[in-house]
Amino acid sequence: MRQRMLVMLLGSVMPLLMVAQAAASTSVASTRALDQALADPARQADRANDQRRQIAEIMRFTRVGPGQKVLELIPGSGYFTRVFSRLVGPRGHVYAVWPQEYLKEDTGGLAGSQALAAQVPDANITALAQPAAALTVPVPVDLVFTSQNYHDYPDAFMGKVDPAVLNRAVFAALKPGGLYVIVDHVAAAGSGLRDTDTLHRIDPAAVKAEVEAAGFVFDGASRVLRNPQDTHTLKVFDKAIRGHTDQFIYRFRKPMP
Image (cartoon, rainbow, N blue to C red; front, side, top):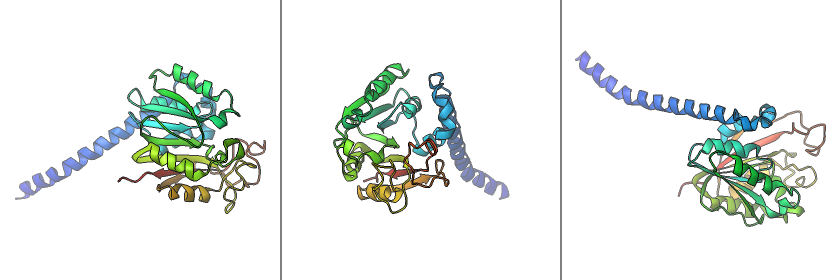
């Protein structure tokens, strides 16, 4: 009787152990893939900023993985783009999207993304330029990511795009269950959009309210870029704070139908 009960118990436990082992091996593989992506020799110049910018933690927070499609909005120098490219691999794709209005300020931005697209081994980056108020992507994506640029959209140089327009477009671009990750500089609590053009900061509570109004569900926050020493009163380019601003990282999810 005892032997039979032991067999039955092992029979019920073994599937759970197998699931746990599979999850563990997947986690190890993901960690290994991230380590390899960050060690890419082509990132030699970028690596000096990895600790300050907490790229490993941010990539984990985005939950990006092999075969996924990513829309990176205003990709700057390609610091994140190259890592996304390595992580999604040959079956995935990265769309580096530049608003045409922004390119009037960063005149070499699109060319830089195009050059990066020609360099990456998996040939999985497409650089796009389009109106700020008309964000589109060729196919639905798993992740929309933007770092330090959400606050630009309401400003004059971007055509004063209503954040509601941007967030609805992001919602439409994502697959059901897809993620929207925003990194930006923190403005004073209760300031709303007041400081977007002057200090290049935005109130995190305002961002959360705007994104949720578009139909997203708040899915988590990371504190790896928070800096309690930042008073939120200086322009982000001020030498006293540049590179060390208090930044929020929010993740939102498009609900399943």
